[in-house]
Amino acid sequence: MISMLTIEPRYQETDKMGIIHHSVYPIWYEMGRVKYCKDMGLPFHVIEEKGVMLAMYYLTSTYLKPTLFGQTYRMETKLTQLTKVRLYFEYRLYDDLNECVHIGTTELIWLNKDLKPTNVSKSHPEIYDAFLKATAS
Image (cartoon, rainbow, N blue to C red; front, top):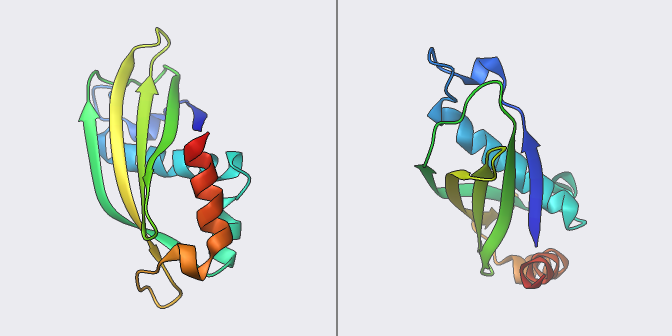
């Protein structure tokens, strides 16, 4: 499954040149993950209400072209790999010419209420199964 999100950069997200600041991309990644969960029928707040959370472990950002204030972008979010303890996402940002201008990845770890890594397939098999199904589609 690929989740689509339209991004209209805010002026406050830019530097003096009107280019989106590098610190903004992880926020956009999070927006993509939240939309991905909603699209797969398991909203993020429902996951957290069940007592599990996702913590960032690793993040990459590849800047292919500048992203600019005043333009609209399409971000595709895809779950690329799933283990019983980790999720791996990829984010691709496209401009209005459908050129890929940015690629990001994140690796997240499932945590329990005590902030300890947890095997979500054992603690919450319904969550694991929902993500497993989404990776297959």
